[in-house]
Length: 387
Image 1 (cartoon, rainbow, N blue to C red):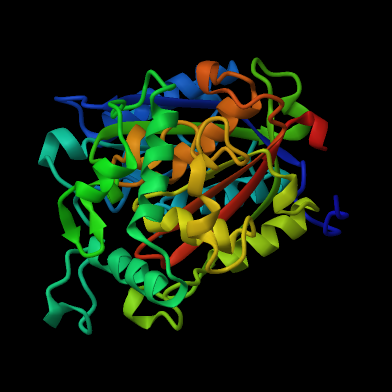
Image 2: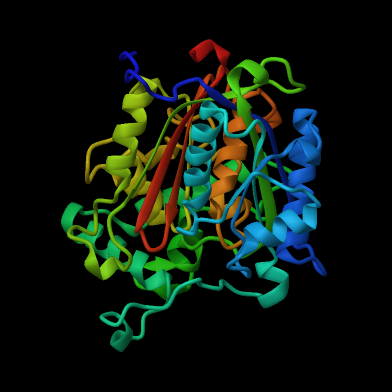
């Protein structure tokens, strides 16, 4: 392993509580109801109480001032609240700010929470943004058409096929079949994906994330305190974010994302490289995301993502475990999926994965995407053995 960047936050803060709640369908519950329940479970996991929370990070799909609403709902008076909204990558950015605040002594217990009732309230994917003025005349399906555009370009430039994309969806389903919490666990084959209804060419319904309800939460504290709490700490080794544009029409290269930048800085802080990672959780809102991110995160060269995932390489039993809970394609996708990559990383690093547990997992990469491939954020997480 390479040496860590001097002055970094490596190992100074840890996730000490992690939980999900209400994955699938939770009728009659609002986003904040779901998020609060996940928060209580995460605090219980850490052996802490609501009144211990003095920094609150939240972003719900229905409330632009959710930091205020959540504090009131939980009955707490935090020193600091934030609801930065960069889409699904917001929660990784929340973790970066929380880690800085903990290290500076500005707070002692940080709670990051999210919930959505998207499936039972609307029955369909609800985008938090409108097409840009440059895209609007072409009547895109937002956000799907932006990802379809990236997929089409990757196919044109590198020879990627729909069968390669299908391998991503099938791998996710195979992991989901090992996860009793996953929403979609039925058998899925490459042939099923290739025969599935096209939604935005070249992406079919099997290339698209689920629409579910669900909530997630994590609790962080300083490393010196973490060792004395209830659950096994998961340490933040490296963390970085990068935003390159808002609308995908402003991308200089549809096959390269800001993950190439965020991961480089996260690896540098952690003092590791892609080869050191045991388990990978990426924001797979669409199957093309997994290919793009595996390339940009350094697990294979640009353009080789399609070949890399062939033959079950990222599925159970493969060389690189990716999205071990089933991901957004088969476990859950309640509007924004980013926080769930953190929770599943904790599950794996604590050895709590049951049938889906990756043996000997000591270091995880959790990566999230926001907007239409607009904002990227990468976390490197590890057990005490990695410090």
